[in-house]
Image (tube, rainbow, N blue to C red):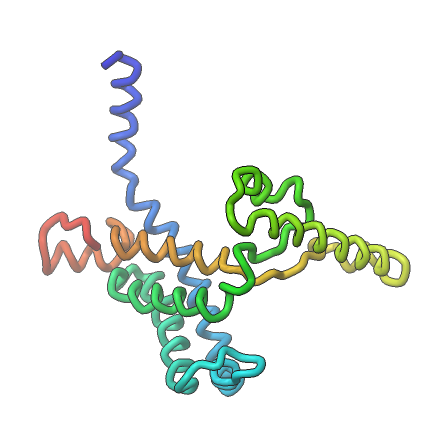
Length: 219
């Protein structure tokens, strides 16, 4: 192996001493997401139950009260446990299941994007359409329609509203509510399930050192 490649390889191996930062970052990212989702469900629990069970404007799930309670409890408890790095691999299982249910029942019919692209030229679907990936061409057509609607909305607001004030905190977008965010959370949870909470800055690590195998990495 050339000397410079060996040095690079050695430096990369040395960076493993900081490998606990990756699961820590995932936990710190996911914890408030999960907790806030559960908190919002809990604060309007009757509405949550209605949304879970209604077949016309809701999810149409059976046993809506039970499922709403389980989803709410999973997200609330899961957010706390992820923050502490406690029972991380265990709590990842019901959280993964919750994400799969959300993807299947809430987001799947809306496609991939959480926020609809309004410019087909810059959409990630553009290169995918060139290789004829199913759904990519339709996504680009949708981007054209989204762009037209946003342009019309901006025109109306510029003429009849205080556009600068309305957009001072951010631009207007079309919420598509696709599977993008839920899938991202699912992937993060899978990483925590298989890799654990990480060393040093998780309770799982110190419990493992105290009660289980010395130096266990599955924490």
